[in-house]
Length: 115
Image 1: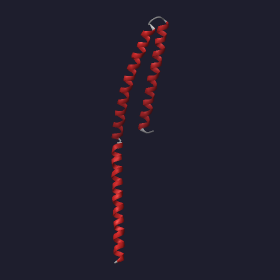
Image 2: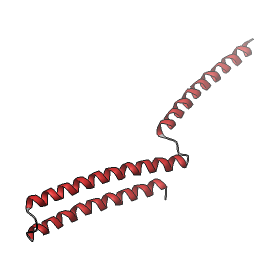
Image 3: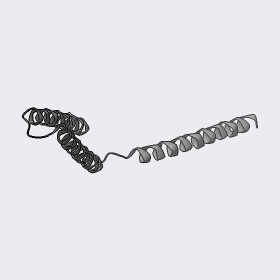
């Protein structure tokens, strides 16, 4: 299995865990409301606050995962997309020049054959 696939699966697992945590928080808040330990408004604020914190953590984890994936790919010698595009343009330019040079060689060979 490729490292990128492992990272993607790990990331998906983390997002799934976050979703479960939010659902569990909602369940817990509803339970506390039904027992009279907090009001509906307090429960809503609690869930909203915890959801916001979970989103912030998720964002931080996403950024960290991107950084780690980039480092791993860089260490493995993988080229960045911009570098690949640059090299593709250079190859296309060289192929064009080579095609022109071959055409000129054919013209010169034809001209020499006529003499």
